Image (cartoon, rainbow, N blue to C red; front, side):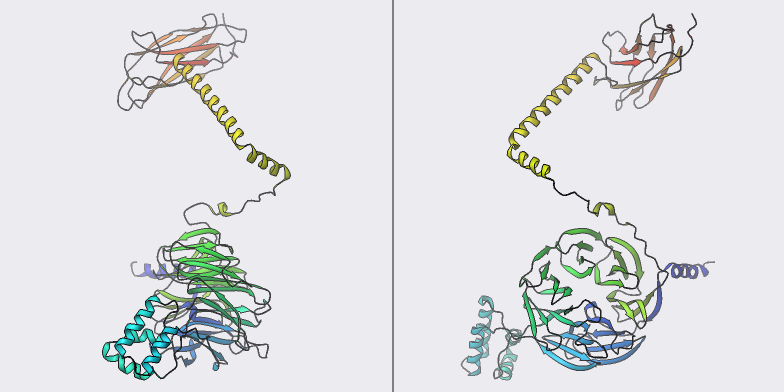
Length: 589
């Protein structure tokens, strides 16, 4: 029994899962991130390939790998660490095969038909004039390496233009290594080059899937460049307040486009066409670790183990809290079903699928997921591809019968609360009333305060009157806190009157109490109009019953007053008025 139970649980979990386990290679040796992985039909044969920019060991073995199915198709050596990878169409030539652009350092390597095609270099930056002067003196042997280091450190602290990479490397060297470094580089021209931090694509003039796309790159010098897909010239340049880390692009360059950028200062900036600077800014309470777009909304993952949704103008829509830190994010865009969701890889070896703020599915992984991609792989549309921290490759296929239940399972306000109300347009009457309230605000406030004080005065007077006449169902005495309610049962002429008395004190019992009735003796008769009440224990309900006989056959009724008194006292502790019903029976005289 114990041996078959785990097998049965595994079979049940596989049956209830929405994914098919297509492939798992724990020794694929893939070290990459979501920005360096893409799916593209590289040969134009209708079968999509998996393109991976492998980081290798961090300093060597960087490669561009292409997978077909479960096998490695080709791999090309990269000269530097890849920071981003994307597939795009450069021209209208047949066959329509996309090119692969790999961002690495200050360069973009473009591969066409899996062969090197073009190398784009970022425009050089302005060199600090003081730094250039110092290196000129070092070239003419006017200063020694120690003096060179002291002067460069002074320039770094005061100059507005940052130092070049050569100077920064020189400042990191040990004293015995400085002279060799200076002799090696002093005769070479001084350059200051930035590096690429993120890369994306933007449709040129059509929104079709097979339309020509421009490259959009973010750099360390806090700038965005949009490149022409054929000549690789800079079409547009935009500035940012901080270095970009994540980027999402939508629209067409010739029509209208929107660039959403998450920067290292913890803010998200939104840029539009013909804007050199950001149009909207979203200030986050923690650093962003992922940025994706679903329909017209922006979804951001933060270091506080939270997922947040915003509109295109920066208005916050919702927040979902996660059970573990985020390791990677991606978009689940199933075009054949028209279904879009957010894929969130967590440090607990799970991938959560969110549609807005609703958690619709959880995918278990054998290891922590470092990159994630969803799309058409081979000839299967719904393929989920993941790489793990240990270098493994996981491929899952979405079942054709899978249905995601959009239930609001997260704590907090219901999903209906986030739906916008259909507020009608402002009418002329509304505008006139608003202007009147603005002009007569002081007078209206004074009139409101006067009515409020009058209402409070009337309520206080009525309360005092009730206390003085003991007409309330609760005792006003602090020493004897009592509560009483009466129930009349019967159609007449005989009625059963039940009094429920309760001691509301915390721990003090009530003793030596009695009940007296006052009524019109020509209308009613009672066998006993006076009772002694037993000791009332706090918190318990004591019912006291008596019978009332109606003596009139004229169909009239009256009030019977009930008094609760202490023995030897004339002032009642509690008073109640009982409205007797009209007798519907036959009065026997």
